[in-house]
Image (tube, rainbow, N blue to C red; front, side):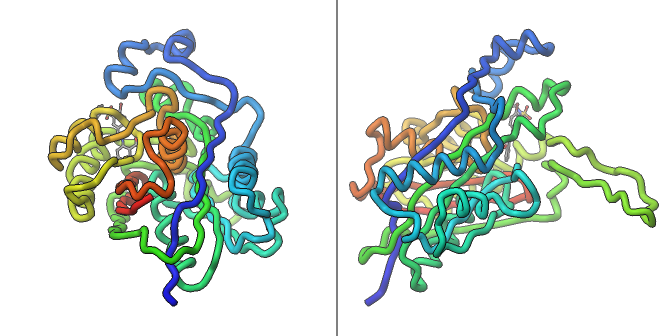
Length: 319
Ligand code: B82
């Protein structure tokens, strides 16, 4: 019998310290009015101690507690992140070790704000081809890659992690998807350049280690390429759309372009800021907690990620 995948549990973990726009305005030349009118962000949570693997481990532990599953039942752990603790080991391996998921293989996905959507798509294929249970987690500590002297980027991002359990079932929940990338435009959003310091190397640093973005270019990308991607999967009877939470203006514009009412687009950038790979699963778990979304309800939703790479993609699924 054919085997399908479904999301059977969600969870999230954000660090304790909330930083308001007001607090940021005491540290740099900015204001609540400037940030909130352009982005819809009022507050974000920032780590004071934890790294990405700590946030993701908390998410994984919650997923196990909530679902009643045990770590040894897991076949795989996928973490979407652009801010791993190390380049190696992966964050997913830290999580695997921390929860002792001894039967799971584990790896990270590097697809910036699209990472969770890429990871969920891949996880679904793993289940369709025989695996029974996996975790897809998006987790970031973007605060460590921000230039805290640059008011144009430092105010936009936040830290956090969230994820889902993906399990085998008999009904098809994943209905459509379209994943895309354009490496030729990759330099419009970069982070974490590593300078080569080997004794033979003669080039000097060309790129910043900090997160840098060309706002205008990626804004135009989100309105043009992401809109057409979303149009290729969206259906008339879709209940809710969960887009990457970069900026409320992007969501308002895309809503008009795809002619889907703004109320169907869920948002939470107001209190989380832009959490890159964590933004979509954070929105998913918060919406489940609020009762807007219910697992097992058959609600039809679209998840759309877009960001560095450039990468973008949408999945249409039922809960
Ligand atoms: S912005 O360039 O300052 N701008 C658009 C002209 C103001 C509305 C800006 C700001 Br502020 C915040 C975010 C963006 C943006 O376009 N972000 C993204 C676009 C595509 C993919 C990812 C992102 C992201 O920020 O994660 C623009």
